[in-house]
Length: 313
Image (cartoon, rainbow, N blue to C red):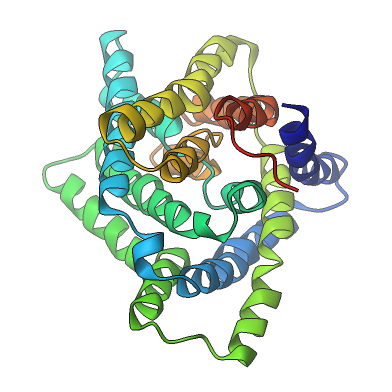
């Protein structure tokens, strides 16, 4: 446990630095946003393309894994939403909580946390998690959160899908998979360029995450709700993924470990942006993002330890 804690704490320390810099106004909100945009739209696509293109497609894509992970994601999303509606919440509000429980920070946190533990083979699972938790949940959540007039839900869905189709992260995943399918090596000069640019993804993304968290808050009246959503995200979701990928589908231990660790990511800031843009449960999701990230500093290494993974050098 202490080995994994020592491995993970420096990564969360960069988040803390970004948080502190933003709180002390050493960097402005606009600067944090710009760093985040660079990380998500430039550095992260370079890293994902390079990792995906460097290994055979059969090693980075597993259809059964993707189906099991996506099914678990949808169960967590739908289950959280149904519980909220059973407690008297309206559909848009319940959908926002469902997104907070199902959308992990797989873009910013997963690569720097998982690469030291599982190595480059994690590129495929990360890519499939991005497709499941970002593309699918954003598309479904956008429709369910819309207080729609007739036909507005469909137009919202089409607009979100069109936006995702132009997302550099999604495009880099498919481009890297296509390159891997050709079995052609990436030219050395391009590979060095991608490695140099992609190397900036982790630090910049983590710093931007901390700066974004500094603008969020956990109101006293929201602690219980945020705690329930956070525990669903970092405990119930990983346990469900372990059950589905392991005992039910019988996948290789490496795939199971990757899926569980990805499911253990804290709630993504994208969930807050989605709730805010639809004008529903923004404060509640904001609290869940902040609280789940704080808890993940301990919960994630504990999850890696419970999986009995070999301690990385």
